[in-house]
Image 1 (cartoon, chains in turn cyan, blue, red, orange):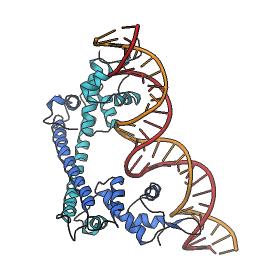
Image 2: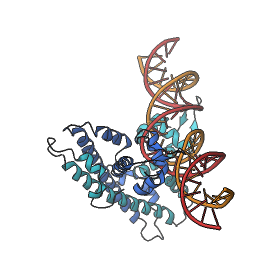
Image 3: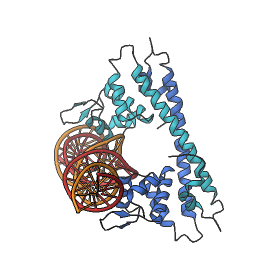
Length: 138
Length: 138
DNA sequence: CTTGAAGCTCTAGTGACTAGAGGCCCTACA
DNA sequence: TGTAGGGCCTCTAGTCACTAGAGCTTCAAG
């Protein structure tokens, strides 16, 4: 049996966040001891570990709710879980692509000020002028 | 003179967002016509363009506020603007690095379900088990 | 038995918007 | 000149995923 603090340490999820997950129905309500404090078992630990990992991977809490609901009554059809994972992958790849464009533009902008002295200060101008950007971003 | 709607179309920033920027003091309050509607000039257009571009580059509204305050009384010292741009670049590179790790893990997870039939469904298990992950993420 | 950390609930705040209600204004067309 | 329907106004409240704080109770170590 773990206290909420022990669970927090073990998983790396902050205490108020654990309570928040419970509040929105993502984590099942644990039992309480005589003094009304939460007491978790291994299942609570596993559930929170699942959530933590999925959050780290960029899944929304809504996605995670669906994934957790799938678990248990899947049969041999995992299409939904797979669909979510793949759409998440596409999402991540898209974010990478956009961020790479941003990085290259930020590099361009930074180089305008390389010396730090005399005749520089095109940073603000560059930020105001979209027309120099290589491609689409945003 | 542009209406808020014209400004919105020209810059691609939504009307309520423009009003929001004004509310938080990021955009100066424009003049009003006889019927109390906002009327913008070229300066308003430029300011909003600057904000839009910087937002697309991932700057926070707070950063943008600083950048806009710098403009005008910089002298030949652009260290602050440059610092912000560079820290933003570091930030973006960091996000890219993390996302690449996530993508590779999501790929690994997706492949567990490649066929879609019989004996698959390790997606949920993989999400619950952090120990298989190659490196740190989150 | 005391003390201080950890737990409890509740409310409110964050960033960057977004949505909706309920009303006023402006323009184009008949 | 009248009117229809779009655009604009303010205000409040909601989103997501937490985070912070107040004010209280409980637990565990010494």
